[in-house]
Amino acid sequence: MLEPLRAYPARAAILCDIDGTLAPIVDDPEAAAVPPEAREVLAALSDRYALVACVTGRRASAARRIVGLDRLTYAGNHGLELLAPGDPSPRLAPELGHRGSAAAGFVARLDWVDLNRVGLRLEDKGPIQAIHWRGAPDPETAEQRAGEIGALAAEQGLIPHQGRMVLELRPLATVDKGIAVRRLIAAAGIRGALFGGDDRTDLDAFAALRELAAAGELHHAVCVGVASVEAPPEVERDADLVVAGPPEFLELLRRL
Image (cartoon, rainbow, N blue to C red; front, side):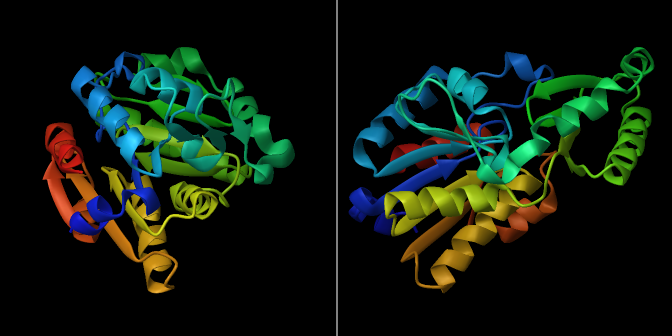
């Protein structure tokens, strides 16, 4: 499954999520870190392959800091941001338009004293706002409150998207990891690609690779599901290959 990528690295892309794929999931998102050995492998891959990119829900600048490599490409905020190798700051997707502050304005009007009490906490990702409840004293109550916030956000024109103990409030629905992957592949003239991910948002990237392959725009595509006790079952169902957590995904990268 990996051999066509290994055989023609000058026309191939290695793409992946960060949290739960390259880096272990931790209670505090700010404490996430890519292990040094993974950083070394990614650096070696970037010397060999046409494109090595992290496609993540984090802000692009935060993704670069966590991975620790300027030479990679980072598609942040599920494709709303693009940080090219060496660039000092990311470019925003043109679709964002005037909606860049819509989610931040919404969460600013919430009662955070009460929400913090049930274990909800806010992560400011610029155009996307994320509400986490990992580590909440009563996760079920916290998730219920998050769901209520998501319903209210939807009424006000935002796009709620629930992941692993997180609710993201997005300003629009026309950009996702699948769109980000399509743009990266088209810009680099890629003919073979691998994507590794562990959450529902990564399914959009899986679908994009398969659609590009079906249309003949990719000669070879590999979707790698990174399994865990928290990963939704669709990740394993829709993957071509399943590995057990970031350590096994790192071993797969070494084979490339």
